[in-house]
Amino acid sequence: MIAAAAREGVAVAGVAPYRLSPARRGGLIFGYSNLNERAIADGIMRLARAVSDLREGTPAPGDTPAPGDTPAPGGRRPTAGAD
Image 1: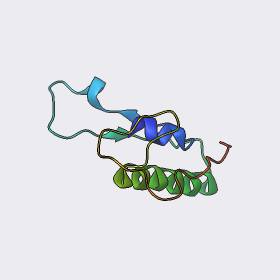
Image 2 (image 1 turned 120 degrees about the vertical axis):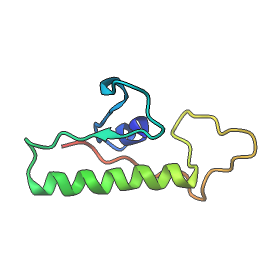
Image 3 (image 1 turned 120 degrees about the horizontal axis):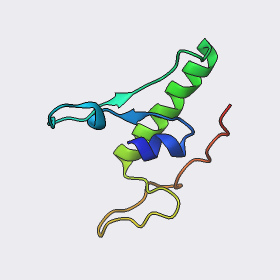
């Protein structure tokens, strides 16, 4: 998820390095205190695109799909530049 978000221009961090013991589920850390509402809304849209791409199984540029995986029709959307 972290790499997929980065491909969309969104920086998030995983919580695993901050846990005292392993957890069954992961989590993300968002830092947005220095962003305005428009930048936050844009980041949410980009993150939603990253989640959608992961759910659809769309490979990132340069990634090789696992055997039996088929990329979504039309491939990946172009990545917008980060502000």
